[in-house]
Image 1 (tube, helix red, strand yellow):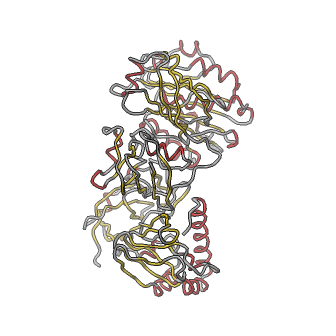
Image 2 (cartoon, rainbow over the protein chains, first blue to last red; image 1 turned 90 degrees about the horizontal axis):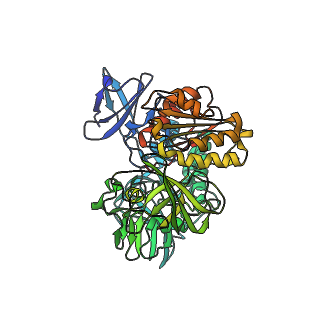
Image 3 (spheres, rainbow over the protein chains, first blue to last red; image 1 turned 135 degrees about the vertical axis):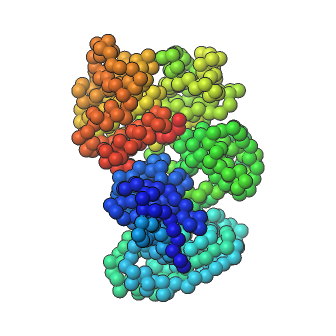
Length: 243
Length: 347
């Protein structure tokens, strides 16, 4: 994919923020930090507030609405923030800033973002990209829990219970969100909910055991993934939900 | 009416009475649905109507600018179910903290409305049933025949309160405000819903407390400082209140603040910032326990607080520009972490 023009270097205030519509129509937040530039989604993941109106000191970005904060170099959430910012790789050439290739769902995923490139490559090699139509059922209660799923685009809902007696149990809609993570746990061989596409959706599907094998080869990555996974599970426990 | 709310992390079900706002029914059922103002202004409680019919309590609510009607979006604080409903909220929703004061509807009567300044009024609502709330919380108040609810912070703090004290600023065109400053009479019946809001103070936080308030935003600070004084909090911790008004003509509660400060000795500092008037000696002579500063309230706080931000919990209230300016000072200069800055945006 050819690189797309974003703006001139001079358009972004030093250690400041600027919202820019890149060539092709994508709206971006461009942040300057000590001579480097970082590109993120233009709107706060919480309530669609423009992030260019936020508070920024050159290292931490704060949305003024509810004080969600992020590390400007990585987009990782800090403090009250419950979600990372979607990052867009930028490249500076001469006096212009360009948008690089779009990151994959694994790169931005809540479990895997920021891992070493070799490890991401190992996981990517295991991933199968699948596209499903609206209404397609990915799994049902009792199905073997062998694979985890990373959402690339679309919308997936979960239902708990069987037959007529089912209740909604949440939905996924953001690129990089991960579900079916029982496949990464020992002793949970079966699905306890059903997952269904609410619209045409593209997913990365990765065998859980094989993913654990890749992570065993990079224990620090394995630790990061397990720490994030336990955070994810705790979040669902806190809401008394299940997946 | 049966209401189903599908959130990002799970689904919730609860019942709504005829005529009851969906948001209030859910909060009263112990579900921490998203909201901020709860009165149709902020847009935080927007949801997508998946199935069922709703009626809009206040079709011209200002918060409507945040919703896309063509995508069947609605404000839960304004929508009333006319059939069983399914709504979708694209946020994570939890069950309410079991230790929090659960909001509920209630009824009461207007008591002792009195002007504090030319455009600020104090009033009380005597409740039919006593009510628990935390210092810093607010209630939404409605009068029969007056469109819309208004949110007001409690000024008082007590357990099992029979009477809620409020402060209201006159808002031209504001339905409830115009009624209060005009036709309202002693004993008029009122409906309330609450308590609401997360800008709360508990002695267990064990931090110095910094309150920055513009105009009638001082109401919630009075509740916080009352609780702190009552529990002898300032024997262990320091407190600062910066209260911004335009001129001395707009200032109120100076007697109450003087008394509060008298109870807390030097551990509580109270500064009244006057934005549109030079300092006069007369005010300082009349109120020797209070300090006065010229300028905007966030500026007064910025100058006085330099070097004192260690172990501080800040509370902010007032008109949105004053709140935003104060947040900027607290985050960028005070380097406070976001969880130590509490405010409810309901102006």
